[in-house]
Length: 80
Ligand SMILES: [Cu+2]
Image (tube, rainbow, N blue to C red; front, side):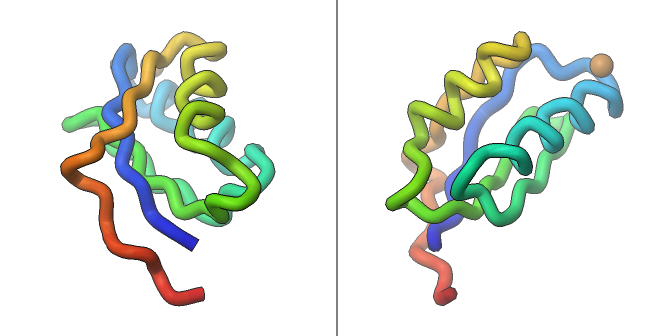
């Protein structure tokens, strides 16, 4: 498992945060998602064998929130 941070654009209220969080949680391979409005960031804990950052970005883009992986903020692997 690993935890990745994504910059998420277009979120303006708690409803947006909820939509992003729900979409991330439903993705295969994602075990946890924490989303904040300000700054617009999603921290996603996932199984890198089952979901790629590009899939996460496109799932959010598909619902109207352009997301971009933060390479600098990438954290070390979490022990599972
Ligand atoms: Cu909103």
